[in-house]
Image (tube, rainbow, N blue to C red; front, side, top):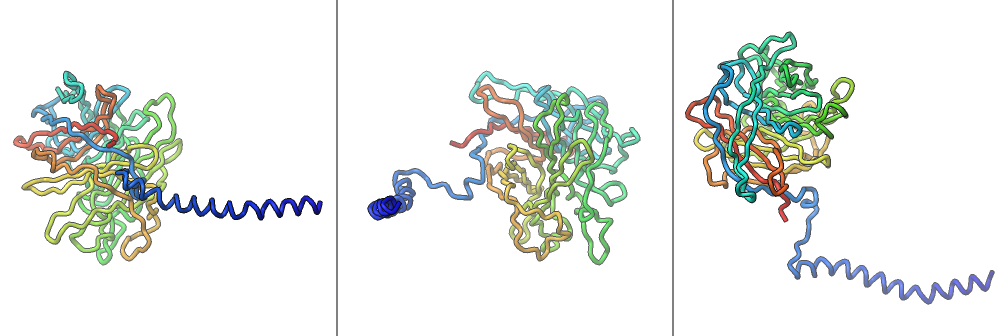
Length: 402
């Protein structure tokens, strides 16, 4: 045994210097490799870049929806789009709050001109059906009782629709599930008290701002087939900051995003996160968050922000990474809160650089695959049922940027 121990000690003494030299060489190589890659023109990947997917957008063209009526309703004021991949149809909600016709959503069929497979265009967007939104009692909504803003198709033969305004009583914002065939309200998502103006006081007002409630709305679901229902997730966000979260009276800096789980039981609020919007220069109009869209199951989204300047509306698409964001559901107010990690954002496309006049771009959704197998993305504008304003539909290719 002693001989074995002596032999082992001798071996260790012999190899230790070599091992130390090897370790020093490896350490030096680790330090040198990034320098060599940079010198060879290979960019170093920052930690921030690794948070995001490698995506870019290619603009394919603009289509203007002709002014029309369908089943005695004026087609327009489209504030959001969602795509039914199974039936190759789009559903678009109108923001008309039962003023010119009852609150409603439309079914559209999209036809693409693929004569140039590398640059397909929208050939036609045709209305096939209008569905009136109905209350629990089956009656259409009265004027100003709902202000539809967002729409998302669910696996339950339904659409979820959000309202960017309060109900007729001026107290409760709505995110509701409506039957796809009948338009009847099935149920509402539970909204926390911190969003409800009615739970505040004149001395300490709280809740969503008027026309600043829920516009952005998206669903993450494993399948849209009702034959194999699984729990799915809904994400919605305020268009502007809650009253109690504003840093100054006219500043909109931190919106809130809600994350729900829909399963066999009642909807459950899973988490809440801060969606940051950069404060504009003094005197400038603040951007608003108008749309969200799930990119994958790993916490990546697209968002659409818009600045509603009457002279020249502007808009920008961002990619979001939500994985490291702080859950703020326990905070009644963000004022004075420390250590909050907001949702990470990176600009994907400044739409003002497309070289075309922009409408009030309000809706965004993934569409059908394009002839080359890539993914399409569509945006739609809200013309507010103004005859002189066309409904603008923009077509993009969503692709890997490298």
